[in-house]
Length: 582
Image (cartoon, rainbow, N blue to C red; front, side, top):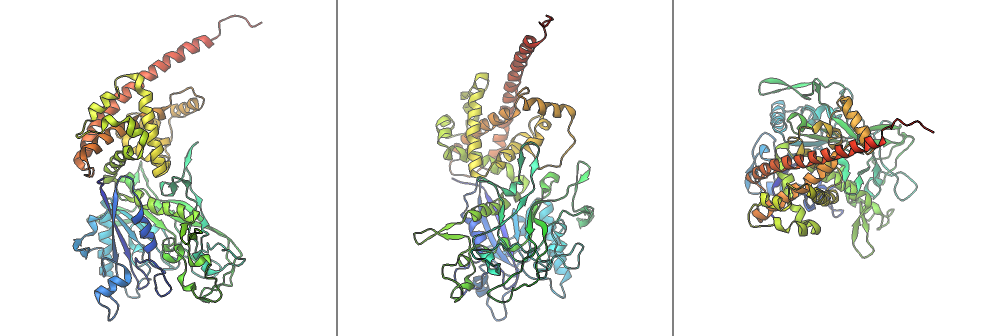
């Protein structure tokens, strides 16, 4: 089945950085992101496929050929600059052609930086972000990875990058280090415990009212994501107190955080980590011993800025690239052959557990962490692409949902027969409302299994926000992640009545509509065959969806009128008759 393609640019630097996996002791791939990218590459994405281009910023080492540098780093391109075209996979590539950037730099800033080069690269990144591109960035403790990020709008204030900044980046050693290492399978805290199957637990920021949700980055089919890999010295993500910073863009001062409803739209720390006090550290390599006990501290682990709300690209930052590097995921291969370490020590194998049959299986903590990786991609996709990708996702429902496939067999034709399919559903017959709702329930069940409960809210926002005039009645429940607005008194009263079962359930309308949208998408999927959903097919779907929402709204109004009549009759029955009580 043809799918649209989301293009991802993964960028590394430094002689330690790269894109290879770490499979044996002889390799020096501890700080490569090969495992992270493998997880992305092996994911079956809902509604699209991905293409990853791996770009390394460093030129070949002294005496090294370009081919040798590509092999050593696992890159598709070396000597990469954000502001220049580059060759990768046999073609010329440009930053503007990508949807998402994953930037995991490891190098410290140079003592004498090339300011002109830096400014040119930052300007290219700004243009990418202002045009809607999604941007992920992380570093580590002190100033590791801070050659460019401290100068990129939004990124610069969502995470602590520099030791001389206010607030400063945390030190890697001493009592103030951000140490999240959890003790492994023995009684002591050892640096190498970062490489076992035991992750740190994070506390989530919850959004919404009565029904609360984690941020979409931390939502999975198995529930909220509460784990990240642990490490001895992480960085810190922030919600900056000052949201007034500006930068130059196209000759004008532009806000880092543009206004939404009259206020700057700031980032959110969506998860916090915990440093437990009183802990010291030993290490097998002797280079990471720490006699100073840690101080208790909560700190920002993940930060997110929803630029889609102000027509910009989204941004995600993380406290450390150790949440993504091989050494924290697939084990510390340097321990192999160490006489003090058992050949079966879990720290050699990371999050991969022996399955009892000579192979390995994924540890439970890592299954959840992998969903965080996937959600970074899902969430950073540019806004202008989301509608097409969601229609494409709905087009997959029939193939993956046997009951829906059986019910919607009439929609699977050689051409787009959306109106015919809807006519067969009896769109003008109110008695069929429950049937539409049933289709929607099947669709919701599939989406929850494929991406998690948050996906139901996200697709409702895509489908309904531009279409229904009463959006404000459901906005807080469909979009719990938006800035909280003062609610009108009648909306508060509506929620109170609905909790008592005395007000209409608008979610029934939304579910029924999703079922009808699935019919349209199934019909278009059959028309396209193996071709991916295109802009033209989405325009056709949008037109059919407009007509569908009007008919659905008319049907729901009729149900409301019938309900009002029933409520009036019941109220009369319950009204006092004037008889005296005995």
